[in-house]
Image (cartoon, rainbow, N blue to C red; front, side, top):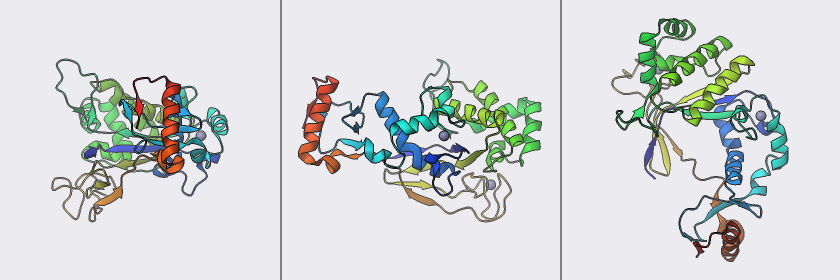
Length: 309
Ligand SMILES: [Zn+2]
Ligand SMILES: [Zn+2]
């Protein structure tokens, strides 16, 4: 699928944990890569898509093609983490599990991604145009009106233009910086002309937890990118502040946003994350096995209108 991904902030609260037993475990990207499958499993479980030890991808057509259907064996995913019960035990008493504040039995709530721009407004009020909210712009407006906040921001962070980028240059902000970031996010979310989306809410709560209990948080601003379904391409951007380098934002020798000297970082190309841990059910059950399994699955769900091919 073609499309764009918005600029976003990856975050992870720093918490030593048996589930985060991997090199550079504080890194938000690695944390997400290692623990995402647990969330995927929990979502499947909540949707009733786990049957006989296999999780099945959401399905909304009337025909399930055994050849194409995706799923995963729960045991395969939990091989790395113990079993669901031990994960539940670890996460239920984890001080960094901020997702628990929203869903009391949520697991691995210590990391997330907060979109910065191009957020579709699900609940537009009549007189607003269909469009997007850009937190960077909302912040510019906010700082021009709120002098106190502006002073806080300029004291705690390097000045950038737009101001947004200065806030996220430090990958591991100090407690004082986190306090200002929390004030900014609270004010921003109070200003957005739409409901506060779950990823925004999670980030707000993560910052608050990080400030109240002094749990370090690790942040990474990821520039907007384009995808063709196979690759994910991030244009040239400043290696310090993360702003995409255009004629307006970079001279080629200096970033106009944060004044950092040097060439922008080259275009980066990565494989898109894909459907992991989902893969073709036929790969682990075989062709016949997949058909039989899916038939039993739809029977158990009581889906009389669905056929398996
Ligand atoms: Zn934890
Ligand atoms: Zn920069």
